[in-house]
Image 1 (spheres, rainbow, N blue to C red):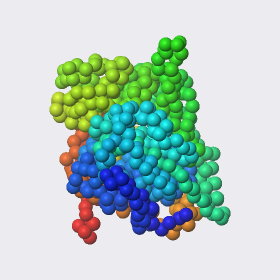
Image 2: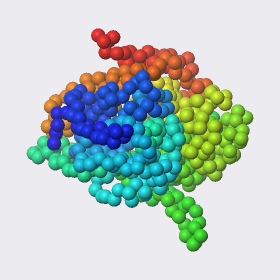
Image 3: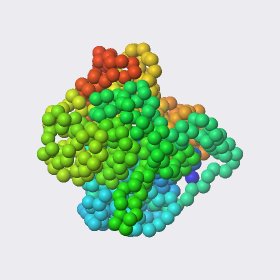
Image 4: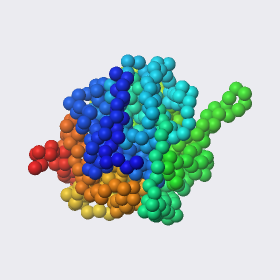
Length: 582
Ligand code: SF4
């Protein structure tokens, strides 16, 4: 049923009560990113700490979820443990469809449980089960135990944290079903601070599809574009792992803590190598006919009864970069082993890998010793990294506790800021040049997906800072429309504004000015970020980025600084309070 308002379910873990609110504003805030920001403004407090029990953890879907393919993501909005400011993280799996089947546009979790617990919530029930026995358990064990605790079937999604979320790691992720994550900016630690080990979203209701020809026609056109053209096939075939060799060729793949941007050892970890030697199968988020998730196999250990244990591990470009080239790994199976270890602890793979790359160089330079790392860390040595990943997840000693608060925080304490590969958060795998370094450093989620800067860097471009910044801002606004729907960003070539408008109309929504909505959501997100303390002019790009050499040659540090200042000034303007703009 198409509703004029958002149906929002609010669960308070302190009082163990739940209620439903009908929140107006669908025509402006759309859903996903927009709805998350709207609800954070309503229920959150930008002047209080992220650990304050009253802070909400918000999961929001969009108006097209369940009706159109690849509208398969959920936006999680929260105050980030990484920097204490407003942020978002996105994940797929079954989470979005489960929320739709549970008849929720958003789930808002406030308060703090008195004991570790599991929340089960659906259209027809809400139950908080005490589960202290789950505390300390890794992600895999937790998933199994929660499935046993809550038998059921149908469209159900299980979100849970590992040790990293419990110990307050600033880059703890929330693992979603199998193979998907709310990865970046520490949403897992927010769950941990609420004593919330797992959430089971039970899609225990149903919804009907629109009758009439219009919906069927629009659906068919979109489906055909997604499946019968070449627009999406690259994601299914080699997947994003196909970028590994391409970026190495372009001298843009970070190696060994970004001490190099290309390496002859690429053959062992290229997407082609993974596809040839390790790929077992593809899988997909619910409601996606593309199936970009590539699952490799890992032969873990020789069992006492002469059998091998095989584990299935999802891979794509980012973990191959962060747990592969960034750590000097040239053996694909070794990289899969590290991905599995990171998954077990509930760590964001990008931040975890980049943090350990910094630690390795810090050890080489003598800024830290093995008294801190507790294990030898050497580029290319999987065994040491596997041990360190566990230390990072559980926070074994002061060093790992500091590193778990962010690489730059550890670098400031132990020395080594110059070579901390931090662009707002631990970098994504694109040493492409000035535009990307500035974009990731300053942008809203500090994500490579906030703009197409990494792609722009790969082509010749004028060093025209105002023009490049105008591109960042426009690009962000258009991506916000899609993340408010909440579509997979891989499908941005298919879901144009016009196509999104057709899809909304076919469901019976009144005509909406999507460009205006994108702009309004963009400004609200920036206002929330600024209110919670963001000062873009004070961002720093570490020295290591001025030493990078790409296919274009050396980095132009003067241009990079001009671009940084121009973008920071624009963001300050975007984040101004409404009355000041009038
Ligand atoms: S393309 Fe990949 S990430 Fe996007 S919805 Fe499909 S399976 Fe999920």
